[in-house]
Amino acid sequence: MALFGRGGPVVFEPYGYRKRRSWGIPRWLVLLLVGIAIGAGGLLYVQQEYLPQRLSPEESQRLQARVGELEAERDKLQSSLADTTRQLQASETDAKRLSTALTGAREQTQKLQQDIALFLDVLPPDPRDGVVDVRAARFANDNGRLAYHVLLTRDTKAGKAFRGVLQFVVSGARASGANATVTLDPIDVNLASYEHLQGEATLPDGFTARQTTIRVLDGPNGRLQGMRVINVR
Image (cartoon, rainbow, N blue to C red):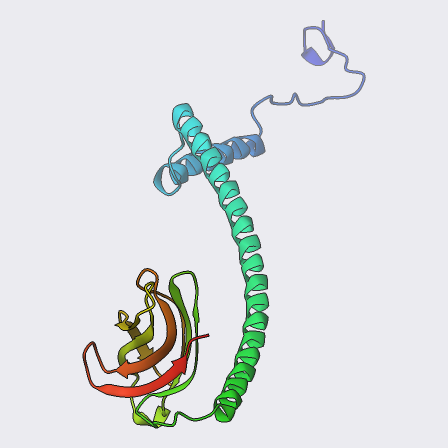
């Protein structure tokens, strides 16, 4: 007979009674997984609705090729800009040099103008005192041609520039020794204040000039505006 009326074997637990644990999924792990799922879904939604669409491999290759072209074009433009900058700097240097030269030329021109004004003042006046003054002239025979150098002046207060012709009436001897007078072709004159006319005119064959009458006309066969007679050397 069992003690106290209980039958069956008695289990001995040396460490006392202990309740068995449950092996279910922890709640924190469930919440973590749910959060990850919600975050991934939100990211996909944002990418689809608000962010640019993802590029395909072909589109990505085309984009990279275009980027390479743009970089090459950028390098080319930078090189061109550098060349332009160097050219601009060289142009600025040349401009400064030319400006200095121009200043010197203006000073020299002013000095020459003063010298010319003084020269015109000391030249003997034209005794005929016409509209145009023949202030000085020189003529010479040069192998069948008449070499000439004539200085004409006029009063600048007279108004606009004088336009006319210069004509030489040459007296001399022909090859036979007979005296003769020839009229040479007219030379155009555009006279503001003073003008040097220098050159050569053709004489008849065998003709030797001895004296030249300088005639200033307001046009071919026009009115006489000035005259002077000069011996030929």
